[in-house]
Length: 234
Image 1: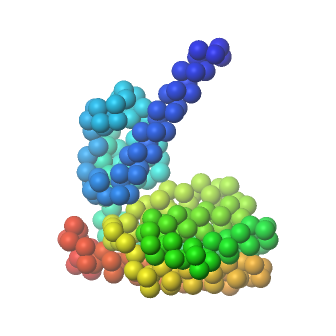
Image 2: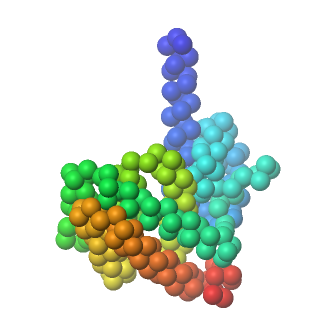
């Protein structure tokens, strides 16, 4: 591959990743609503790029589970109640396995590094900036998943987790209450304690409890949200 060809490939990859990141950010900030159609031509005009990087970026988001493609058009992920229940169940099982394996395989230095993100200053930042809690939460689950040392599990959980974080964003669109942040941190630390003590079964049980509580909190938040008649009826 000559330099000109390589430059063209890198530029295309840069534009595709850029389009993908912008669209993802808009989805999580709820600029695009549930089920909203994402028109390639319109997005290309808005982002001031050709349709190719937009189309490639949307394909990437389909792979992440945030966008749906019906062979005609793209739209934002819009699950019904049963689909959400199914997603939660699948994630719970996989995350329990992840925590159990992390208790066996995760390096002590990596465990200690995770403990450090739950300092008082970190919790304060989460309270002041609701996006910080999402960042910390993603880091917590990502590092435990990496610590499980199971590549197949890693690929299976990726899409499910992205969808769960988006579902939670629909309920807590503006901010997370202080009690939510403190309770989440407490549950995370309980999981980490068992991982640190090399207790696979207890780590798995603590992760299950954390996710069940998280699911309840999410359903409660969605129950007060007027955008979904299905969920309001729960």
